[in-house]
Length: 443
Image 1: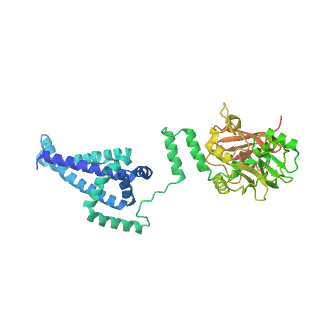
Image 2: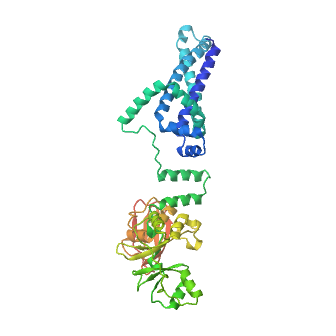
Image 3: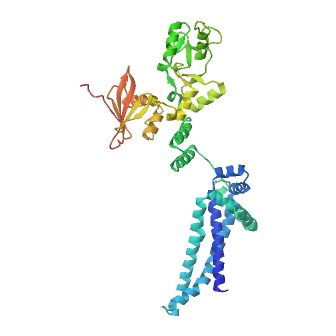
């Protein structure tokens, strides 16, 4: 065999090995989600790739047979092609006794480098850049190779499947996708400019519905506007004109004895028909669903869907009303700042790098805003005010402070024992442990 024939044979072996490297990495790393979309669009090659991924034993067996066979042949052919040339070059410097074996080592190293660079590293990097496109290009030849090597593939597949089962692993590919995986993909898409930051925030808020409880989005008890059956018409008119609500609870004497709710449209209809405003007429007061305060927002959506309602009253374990929630409240939680006016923001960052935080701000929102992993025992409270009370172990007063996760939380406004506003300041050095301070003395 001439030198040119040997070099051409080595070139063919490198190309075949490069093909197997591309097939191995692309078929293994191709995303099933993308392949499913292509298969649904009618691409038969994508369906073939999915079939191979479902039974990876045949594929990997055929690839390993081919790769190892080509590597052995490459070493033999490479040594035969390069050894005479290096022997001739070294003969000008060394004696034949000194050259013995050196030409073989140099030829072996050169052939190995050719295979490593052009038959392994480069093809795999190209395949990783576009795994789905590469996988669909090589899938048909790969099926042909599996058929040609079927006897060996069958034996190796059965042997490897037996070993996998003995180790307690499944022989089929199992793709499990968690919410963390999806959020990581969303974050990567935002970093690449595919998604806007606002869109990323909306997607994150959707996943938060599974963990956020009803109190984080409800209208609290103290802000509920309600009527009793005996309220005079003038008082009803004043309340309706002073608040932007379109649903009002109707109660018997007090808020904990709810009869139902009335829509502002019914009241408007009575006014337009020159009738006195009355809640005792049939059909005016409608029943409303009651839900416990332990539900998540995701479960609230399920309740709304089953009951065909978009408004519910929230009760605690003592059957006392703690708030009301509407479908708009849940959607506002999802949309975040996209649908909230500047005047309604509960967390406001100031020019000096501090934050003014409303006491009723859900603790989850503050975690996102300050990039805090978690607050201590955050299952025992829902709001920033609850966090301050938990840490201080008392009813907070102005200038009370709590240090946590590198931030100082200071109460700056209290109204009838209710925390209205908290000032949050980033510390120069994060504090390792929580620390609660007593209020400073008044001047």
